[in-house]
Image (cartoon, rainbow, N blue to C red):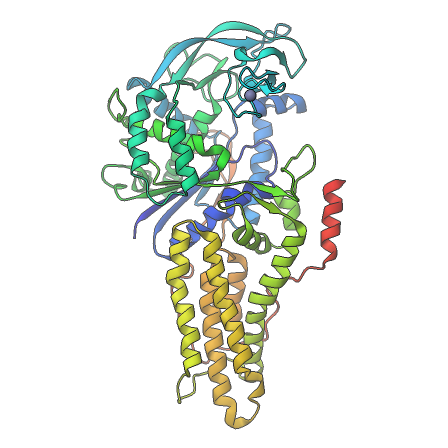
Length: 600
Ligand SMILES: [Zn+2]
């Protein structure tokens, strides 16, 4: 058993989540965490809403709200979305807690002391008409690199290069069209070149990463420049240095504070657990967390933050870059074991876009369909290592032909036959098992090694494929053995044996599918006469801020109960009732209905 950190990307609190968001990292990180817990590991799964930065400030201004009010609204919406999908966070919190502010400031100070954060004077844009700072992404102009006409001040969406607004040709404010004025402004920079060697050594020792993620990360190291980590902005974490702390016009840049959320959420979880030092078992390089593993889940647009910026912060704070230094008061901290990045999901061949209504929000989806139907689609057809397309026709097919006709049918027919003919889990005939019986049981048992190993290596598509092969074998076994033909009293012991074997394999397959389909797994467990928690679920709790800030909702849960990753022999004689279907067959008309919604 070991300590496993599942660090899940932080959704930005400016709107509800759509299924593209949760297919890249939400569901895959939950599948991984559920499996690792079932296999006996001590998992800590953390995340929260990312609530600072210019877009929240600008959107709040537009809606006549304070940034905090806007963040409150979407924090709650997102917590409910993730809860609806059954994502088993130990703590899903937010970046506006006082605990988070304190941890961000501690990391900033530690890195500053070690010389990895340095002040620098740069040119910043202000609006001539209001005198207010004009954020980078609200300036548009021609890209100096590729000539694209609508490059943003922070990045060109055409060539992908990061930009400075002052480099844009003919810059204009996107808010009111005026030409910004550039004035001198002082900011703090993360000295990434001083951390390049330690990052390279760390990347060189990584094993088992998806090849495209490792290649992309290595390339990022070839051209590391110092990077601004503060901004001219009122909304964010204050800079914790003398002469800066009281200033209301300078804040720590949102991406710097958001990645530190993994650590601050772990600390918050520990403080709430009653053992404030417990987080060290997942984080401390020396001692408690020495053998811990840390997996980070995100979409590919966030790789740079997890394979360069975050490890650079951890190394710099721990005093491990070319300027050396001393670890801060939190001690030396573990770098990521693996950055698990997924590709993009598109929608009916188009990019998700809330403004163009090419979108399906998680909450709308869950109003019309079951969480496990979406989880199944994501597992078998999600963007694990290629961009993939969500289409309603494919969703319908996967749901009806695979989930309902494959797994649902196996559960239903084996339990209803056993319930009708025996009213309980039948015993095995004293004459013993046939070769076919033994072969099927062996296939199911072997699944625990195969499927588990694939999930542990983040090959979830293959993993669920292997689990569904067990289901297909069991369906074939039932057809071959045809227990419904064994009507004579003399044949009943053999019928009992066949159904016993089938139910045992249903139980095993259910365990194999539990990380993917936790809601239906609990139902199947109960249909087999099981009691208690099989697949634990998260709960939403309203909590007090630990340090006197406003209360807020978190997603948390007790995941100590539940099935283990092993075949459990069925108890002969346990009563069985006629089952209700566990999955809903969908009418083909939903495809046209959904496509009409998309284009409305
Ligand atoms: Zn460009």
